[in-house]
Amino acid sequence: MGILEHLIDLVMTNPQLKSVHHIAIICSNYQISKKFYTEVLGCSIVKETYRAERDSYKLDLAIEGTYIIELFSFPNPPVRNSRPESCGLRHLAFRVTDIETSIAALSSHGVNCEPIRIDELTNKRFTFFSDPDGLPLELYEI
Image 1: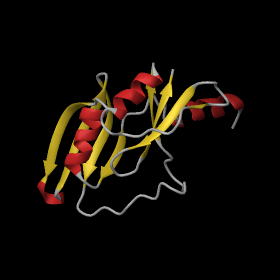
Image 2: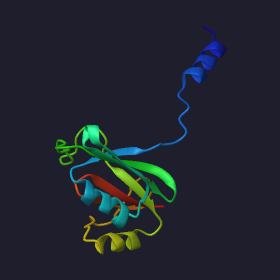
Image 3: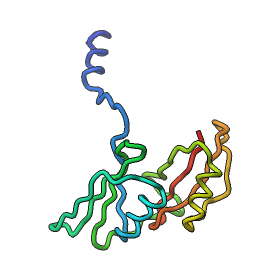
Image 4: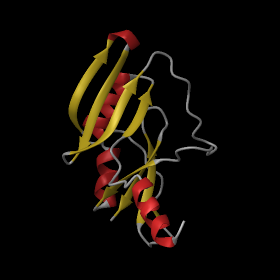
């Protein structure tokens, strides 16, 4: 196979990703997590579905009109090991324009954030907090 054929093959087999479509999160208490993601973080509900055959809710959430999170409930899901950090998805980060304002808004809902740190590669400020199930979430100032 020549170089031109190889390049054409690469272009034809590349999945041509455009963006992240959604992040799926499984919660242990649907009502608590629904309130957290909508009322505390400010995500808007796109669609809420109850699937009786699975005894499961699926809540589609958007941030500023962009579909981003699928929140699922299942009966008795196993606990996620977040600390110590383990292999797999590490955390979910949200872009913010003013980290202090965002931290104050979270604090007003009783959500504790870690001290603000500086990303040593970008010099941007960030902090971590957790959702009701201990999933690590990050605020990253842009």
